[in-house]
Length: 173
Image 1 (cartoon, rainbow, N blue to C red):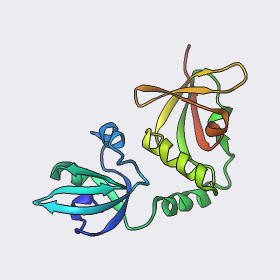
Image 2 (image 1 turned 135 degrees about the vertical axis):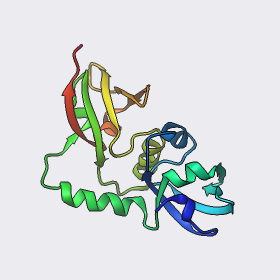
Image 3 (image 1 turned 90 degrees about the vertical axis):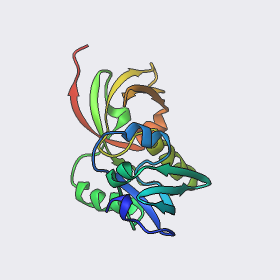
């Protein structure tokens, strides 16, 4: 359901986007898939939402392109995880330099520190379906640098192991 149809007072989760237009800007503002939001105002289709202690204004056109769910994002990912259990698990740390990949899902995370890190990865744009290229791997495998959404991001080996990916191809390089 698009955000534009949400009612004031509802607590919802961002499930994705109808189109890729403006996605980088939304993720940069903290409106990444999986983030919990509360609808604070709906003024003629223009929305004001709360993300934690932050208030964000969204115009009506953009609100129509943001998809929301009344279920936590983890619930949506768990459905995909059940479907993917038969497939071999490849993590970001398994990829080589110049290899392209796509974020499939996150490793199951039980403790609060790892869950907080998962939210940071989502906020940095590493959402399921996002494609990236491995640009550098340090000699001992820590850190791994990737090019994602036009910027370079370095992840520690343990952090890279939390990302389940799908290998796409080997770039000429």
